[in-house]
Length: 133
Image 1: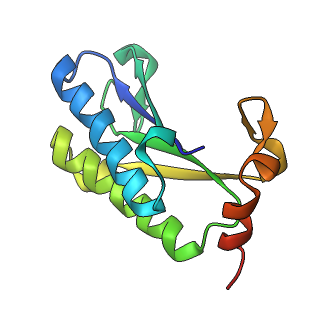
Image 2: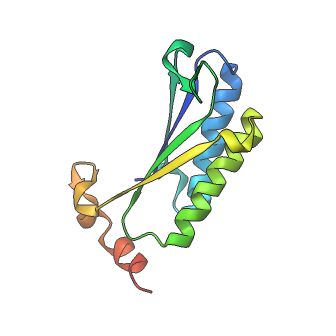
Protein backbone atom coordinates (compact mmCIF):
# COMPACT_ATOMS: atom_id res chain seq x y z
CA UNK A 1 0.00 0.00 0.00
CA UNK A 2 2.79 2.50 0.55
CA UNK A 3 2.49 5.16 -2.15
CA UNK A 4 4.75 8.19 -2.51
CA UNK A 5 4.57 10.90 -5.14
CA UNK A 6 6.92 13.82 -5.58
CA UNK A 7 6.11 16.95 -7.57
CA UNK A 8 8.93 18.85 -9.25
CA UNK A 9 9.48 21.45 -11.94
CA UNK A 10 10.17 19.86 -15.30
CA UNK A 11 13.65 20.15 -16.79
CA UNK A 12 15.52 20.84 -13.55
CA UNK A 13 17.03 17.39 -12.95
CA UNK A 14 18.52 14.79 -15.30
CA UNK A 15 16.66 11.47 -15.76
CA UNK A 16 19.27 9.48 -13.80
CA UNK A 17 18.85 11.77 -10.80
CA UNK A 18 15.06 11.40 -10.95
CA UNK A 19 15.40 7.61 -11.08
CA UNK A 20 17.74 7.76 -8.09
CA UNK A 21 15.17 9.88 -6.23
CA UNK A 22 12.36 7.36 -6.83
CA UNK A 23 14.59 4.48 -5.75
CA UNK A 24 15.75 6.26 -2.59
CA UNK A 25 12.20 7.34 -1.64
CA UNK A 26 10.99 3.76 -2.10
CA UNK A 27 13.78 2.29 -0.01
CA UNK A 28 13.34 4.85 2.77
CA UNK A 29 9.57 4.31 2.82
CA UNK A 30 10.00 0.55 3.20
CA UNK A 31 12.63 1.07 5.90
CA UNK A 32 10.54 3.46 8.02
CA UNK A 33 7.34 1.42 7.71
CA UNK A 34 9.06 -1.93 8.10
CA UNK A 35 7.26 -2.99 4.92
CA UNK A 36 8.53 -5.14 2.05
CA UNK A 37 10.02 -3.00 -0.71
CA UNK A 38 7.88 -4.76 -3.32
CA UNK A 39 4.77 -3.13 -1.84
CA UNK A 40 6.05 0.43 -2.30
CA UNK A 41 4.97 2.48 -5.31
CA UNK A 42 6.79 5.73 -6.12
CA UNK A 43 5.72 8.26 -8.74
CA UNK A 44 7.03 11.49 -10.09
CA UNK A 45 4.92 14.32 -11.45
CA UNK A 46 6.76 16.96 -13.43
CA UNK A 47 5.17 20.36 -13.89
CA UNK A 48 5.99 22.85 -16.61
CA UNK A 49 7.78 25.87 -15.11
CA UNK A 50 4.93 28.19 -16.07
CA UNK A 51 2.53 25.91 -14.15
CA UNK A 52 4.41 26.17 -10.85
CA UNK A 53 4.95 29.09 -8.50
CA UNK A 54 6.71 29.34 -5.17
CA UNK A 55 6.19 32.48 -3.10
CA UNK A 56 4.37 33.93 -6.11
CA UNK A 57 7.39 33.41 -8.38
CA UNK A 58 6.74 31.18 -11.41
CA UNK A 59 9.14 28.32 -12.05
CA UNK A 60 10.88 28.42 -8.66
CA UNK A 61 11.07 24.79 -7.61
CA UNK A 62 10.06 23.77 -4.10
CA UNK A 63 9.63 19.97 -4.04
CA UNK A 64 6.35 18.66 -2.71
CA UNK A 65 5.98 15.05 -1.50
CA UNK A 66 2.68 13.28 -0.89
CA UNK A 67 2.46 9.84 0.69
CA UNK A 68 -0.48 7.56 1.32
CA UNK A 69 -0.47 5.38 4.43
CA UNK A 70 -3.11 3.20 6.01
CA UNK A 71 -4.74 4.63 9.12
CA UNK A 72 -3.36 3.22 12.34
CA UNK A 73 0.30 4.07 11.80
CA UNK A 74 1.75 5.60 14.97
CA UNK A 75 2.29 9.37 14.90
CA UNK A 76 6.01 8.91 15.64
CA UNK A 77 6.36 6.69 12.58
CA UNK A 78 4.49 9.18 10.41
CA UNK A 79 6.76 11.99 11.61
CA UNK A 80 9.84 9.88 10.82
CA UNK A 81 8.42 9.30 7.34
CA UNK A 82 8.02 13.04 6.68
CA UNK A 83 11.59 13.66 7.89
CA UNK A 84 12.95 10.76 5.83
CA UNK A 85 11.30 11.98 2.63
CA UNK A 86 12.67 15.47 3.19
CA UNK A 87 16.15 14.02 3.79
CA UNK A 88 16.00 12.04 0.54
CA UNK A 89 14.86 15.01 -1.53
CA UNK A 90 17.62 17.20 -0.07
CA UNK A 91 20.32 14.52 -0.46
CA UNK A 92 19.45 13.42 -4.00
CA UNK A 93 18.34 16.69 -5.58
CA UNK A 94 20.52 19.07 -3.58
CA UNK A 95 17.62 21.42 -2.88
CA UNK A 96 17.35 23.67 0.14
CA UNK A 97 15.67 21.83 3.04
CA UNK A 98 13.40 24.78 3.84
CA UNK A 99 11.79 24.59 0.40
CA UNK A 100 10.62 20.96 0.76
CA UNK A 101 7.00 20.35 1.75
CA UNK A 102 5.30 17.05 2.50
CA UNK A 103 1.91 15.65 3.33
CA UNK A 104 0.73 12.26 4.54
CA UNK A 105 -2.73 11.07 3.64
CA UNK A 106 -4.11 8.42 6.00
CA UNK A 107 -6.61 6.13 4.31
CA UNK A 108 -8.97 3.82 6.17
CA UNK A 109 -8.18 0.16 5.32
CA UNK A 110 -11.74 -0.31 4.04
CA UNK A 111 -11.09 2.43 1.47
CA UNK A 112 -7.86 1.01 -0.01
CA UNK A 113 -7.77 -1.89 -2.44
CA UNK A 114 -5.06 -4.49 -2.87
CA UNK A 115 -5.67 -6.68 -5.91
CA UNK A 116 -9.33 -5.67 -5.79
CA UNK A 117 -9.76 -6.55 -2.12
CA UNK A 118 -10.05 -3.99 0.70
CA UNK A 119 -6.83 -3.74 2.71
CA UNK A 120 -8.93 -4.38 5.82
CA UNK A 121 -9.43 -7.91 4.49
CA UNK A 122 -6.16 -8.46 2.61
CA UNK A 123 -3.92 -7.29 5.44
CA UNK A 124 -6.13 -8.01 8.46
CA UNK A 125 -3.31 -9.42 10.64
CA UNK A 126 -0.89 -6.58 9.84
CA UNK A 127 -3.49 -3.89 10.49
CA UNK A 128 -4.53 -5.50 13.77
CA UNK A 129 -0.89 -5.68 14.93
CA UNK A 130 -0.39 -1.95 14.26
CA UNK A 131 -3.44 -0.91 16.26
CA UNK A 132 -2.25 -2.64 19.45
CA UNK A 133 -0.45 -0.09 21.67
